Length: 114
Image (cartoon, rainbow, N blue to C red; front, side):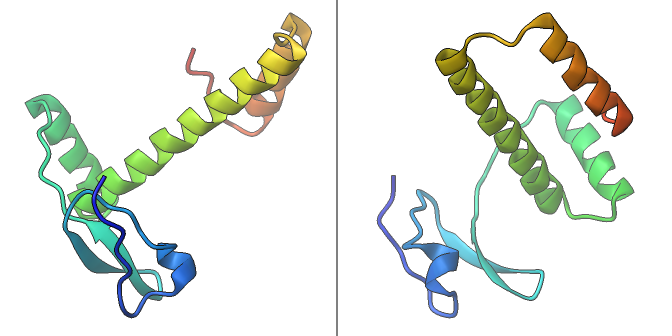
């Protein structure tokens, strides 16, 4: 992990003494500057092409699309960890509980990806 860095122009709550292992840049996001790490990444060619097309369809830069995809993946990981923690403390969900959750997601229009 890189050094602790605090950037000018950002509220402490934005940075909380931001730790970043890469060079920092500022980007405009919403109504204020946000810290951003500038990275060099490698994607499989079909993944890169599909990501670029998805970003284009949404009128976003590839960087913004990849950031959003990363946020979504991290939220899923957090949710799965929370479920695992709950099940470790309370036992596995029953088939009836899982079916009830599926019905709620169906009602919300969220597809089942299993």
